[in-house]
Length: 128
Image (cartoon, rainbow, N blue to C red; front, side, top):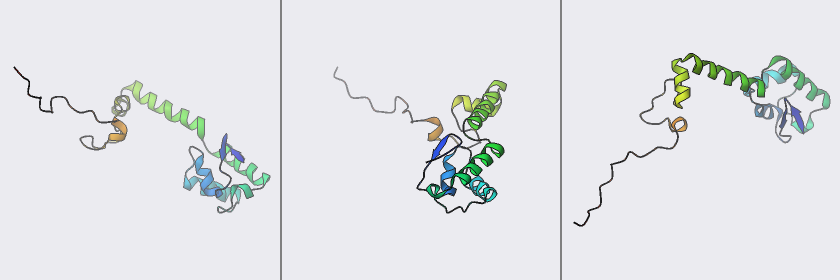
């Protein structure tokens, strides 16, 4: 099991795919890292030598912000927007889409489960 940036990456997958399990590394960065480390992207993680794993660790640690540091950075940026009171910050506070998407329909992921408006059902007839 290879442990890179505090994450145990899956050993059965190809290195290029396994690196994307680290927060902050997508497909593009994964291929860039492998080119810098001179490792074949289709190699399985379990087939990597100790020296190759070490090269990957060093490249990621020195050149990229990943995992906890990156999450802290993103959280601080959102907190700053909220504190300043910018439009984006207000949208974050309200739990609504931030980047100008429509909210009349859709936006269910951000808004949560829909709540029915009261008074739409017909009342049952009551005996007098």
